[in-house]
Image 1 (cartoon, rainbow, N blue to C red):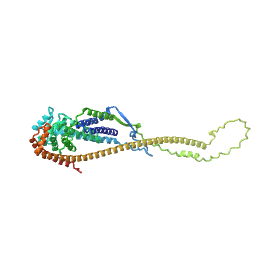
Image 2 (image 1 turned 90 degrees about the vertical axis):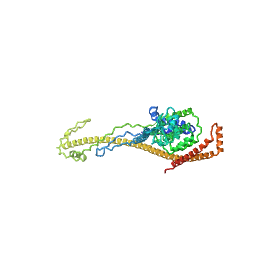
Image 3 (image 1 turned 180 degrees about the vertical axis):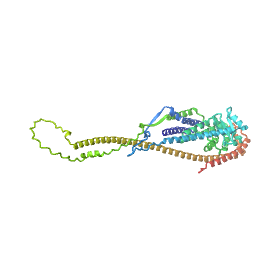
Image 4 (image 1 turned 90 degrees about the horizontal axis):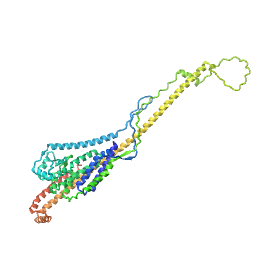
Length: 542
């Protein structure tokens, strides 16, 4: 399991890094085109396990790693006892890693599922919007495939979810502001047409599978940010930038549920979105061929990487059956007293009793001359004591041979025990090596987690700084709007603006410019109020 998690970490990091790098290099393209590239990366991340299982294997052999022999139970005889030795079991670190991964994945999936259930509950309890301003704007923007437009008191900011035609939920505060209807619906309908909620769900599944990889979290955040910018660009085709920015400012302090796509989006990117809305340039013309080439290049590079399998050349250890306990050798029985007494003549031979003096032999006849021969002595010539000593010696020799055989058997058993101990020592050494490798992997995982926490803290600090910077930009924009309103009070300046509009082929009256003055001052007030809220959100809570 450790090898699988390490392989998925490497492959998902490569896919996410390639996609984020490509998005950064294509920073001048439209948000919609960059979103397409990130969506392809999300789909590829979800396909990584299937490519690894079903695709051809591209194995890369690594240096040999220690291989642990199958765990077994070894019983050794104790001195003078037949008790078994304690059981030796390898530590199951991979089991803990698998449990940690599964727990994180299940927690994230359950969290997203609870968010979807919350949206479903709000949808069931919501009221169908019948306000003419909202229904007219919906019919004008959506055409024949209009989503369900519902109002719910539990919704803080407008949001949409589901696949087309989908559902749009607004709160009571937005329902009472019909002048924002066109901006809100243009943004949410853009989300539904682009199927942003579907890819939001897929990105959450990818994060659940690869939650241990901070690059996947960054990819999901970048996908959410660019999806909001793409919806803004689509909405600005129907709404004036000033009105759209005013609507965003009115919802600057609201929050969006994590299981839906909302108009406010992430708070850290709201200031940038408002700035882009107010200072937008003519968008670059779409280049579908270039984006198809970019997506194809991502797939061509990442797909072979998904099929790569990291493996090590291990010397397989044949599985061994558990060793049975060796029966201790029976102690050698001491010699019987009779045998010891019989061995006494061998250990300390005593002089045999002197035989009685034989009678004087007769005179020997002249011995014949022999060329050679043998002399045979019979035991019949021995005395009873000598025959008993010979029998005892033979019995002692037989007993000594028995003891020698037993000694050889004990020596063979000792050699077997020594070989068993040597095998156990080698297996313990391999197990220790395996434990060291697992400890290194665990330490590396802790380091990666710490780096992810540090990266998250840095991004939060950057987000607060961006909020403060956006607040300053909004204050500057409000100042410019007040200055423009002040200039419009001058009849000569109004006449100059009317003449410029006539040169551009537009018709602007003096009364229209006078009517725009209070609106611009009101917009400046709203921008300053929104800047104050964003500045408060950008304060470091620590």
